[in-house]
Length: 367
Image 1 (cartoon, rainbow, N blue to C red):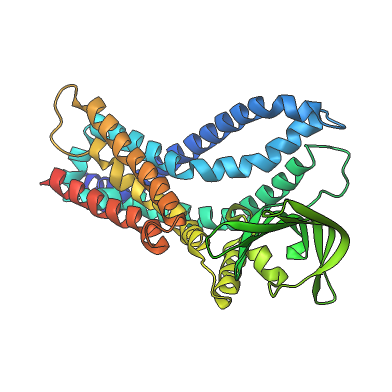
Image 2: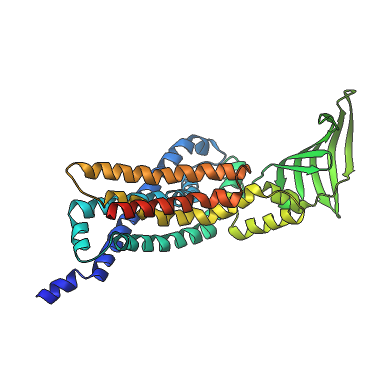
């Protein structure tokens, strides 16, 4: 009987119990949060969806199928945080943590099964994002450009604007299409030595053909004389290749890690800045990895001296601690995109900082 009891409370069985309890709560919370967010998002967009050409209930189902993957990806880390808090609170409330520690398990070993489970979740999160989310985001953007029309058999590519610099010229493109070979509404600003605009050239669209840029419906305007000239078609004398416009206009949320890395290499080969894209490239890795930190940050709810009425406070502190990670992560990502911080530092600093803070807090509570 004594051997059976010892086996029942052996560390491997206890750690497996923690991991299973956490995983079941994570799955339940992930599904619940994703469904709630999807329902709210669908309600906000339902008027535009049903007002589109050929709209029907199929529009709502299509919108849901395209947006749900993004909703799931957005709430993975938050679901892990809530699941960790609930697991720790439940274990602490029923004195199970005390029992586990009496068998010789340290606080770090109790947290470890949940962190190990989160490693697997983070891996699936990354694969899910690369294989499904980026494609659904790209198709959603194309459908949105078509005003959610259900009559379009072939959706137009999702356009994105771009700025380019060449010598004393600043080029703005409202929409880059066909992998950079078709540019819509191009404006070229010629800048003088006094940093003022001397002239502008506006083209309705520009096409890359036979190794040259051909501009159509062109208007030249001289700011000093207010004199303008309209030309039906002309050759654009520039050394900018289509690949640069494609790389400059890319939306990091609609491409995979490999495609984004290739575009960064393209811009670097031309000596152009890649700060924004590098920040997003590292965020594609750091984002899923943040899930691993959630049990560590939520451990405030389970460890330390338990007094009457302190459990709720500990859960609230654990939630605030975990939520602050999301705030800092998004803040530094924005800062990194603008180049205020090196993009690698901006992407990884929150993860490293909260890993150290979470470890320190857990060590302090155990002591």
